Image 1: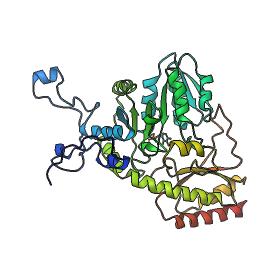
Image 2: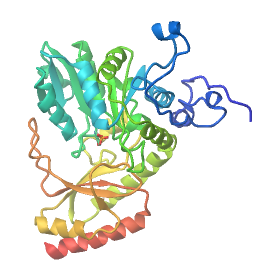
Image 3: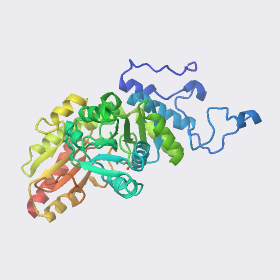
Image 4: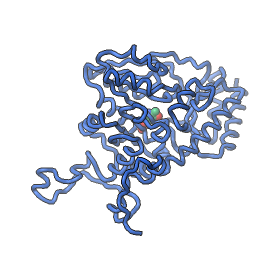
Length: 396
Ligand SMILES: *Cc1c(COP(=O)(O)O)cnc(C)c1O
């Protein structure tokens, strides 16, 4: 096989094709398929003139390496963005995005359903730097207009919401925000650009915790923030000032995972929906929080704006003593109990949004569980949960 030239970016390619081909340049890697791990701080210049004028694609390891470029180029293409930065965690990508969009004296609107550490950054850091933060009802839609102030510079959206799974009308919120000159930042971790193309739907800066579906293996932490042409310069500048550089090995692993992400996500989505329906039919279950279910209050928005679901959803149990929930979870063999998700293995966590919600009341009507459905056989997962529900009933 001859060395393939870097394929030109063709907007006609489907998302799965872009996932496989984007960000690779075998011709620059002696024909090898993948960009290798470039570890490096120092970049050597051949001449006095070259170093004086910084002539060369790479200048120093904090700003860019070929490995970093492979991931950010691919993500830019996949997300339909003007540019992307890669950071060492999903949370750090969110903090860079927020710091790119707001300054002292500005006002920031944040959905009440935001990932909890995002709230903690807003309240614990942005507030200290003079940014006023208001939380809003995730289902606000065009009603966001009433919350906008003259100094509102950014609106943070997340859909479906972390843990609680409310859908948000992002195009409607974006239309209002843009009319007022505000930036729309989205945590798009659940859907990824494969299921929700953020920038085509009005999002200015989109964040992905690559820790979840890029990794696919619960074995790395990485974050991506992509932006449209209006906001990429500010995002890039903020990234350069803060220098939150991801490790070369983690970037390499994220790229490796990204190539098969469409395939895994399709299966997580299919099995996730199958399991969500199975939970719906259980007598112990009050309701299931999954926008892919026709009964879900966010279903119409999901159907309009998203092209699929990932494998993460919520289950509200009918009221039982806490000890019964503990008995159910403690004996599970296939569902691990732990934070994060997006890996090949199924997970469950108990959750409660009551302590930190401020704009809306979280009153689901019973104990809440969040499930991530992995790639195991569905029959085995159901048998594990059958036994769990038997323990729950015995302890009720
Ligand atoms: C996990 C997660 C993050 C943060 O990602 P980390 O890599 O763990 O920092 C952000 N948002 C959502 C919705 C997440 O699930």
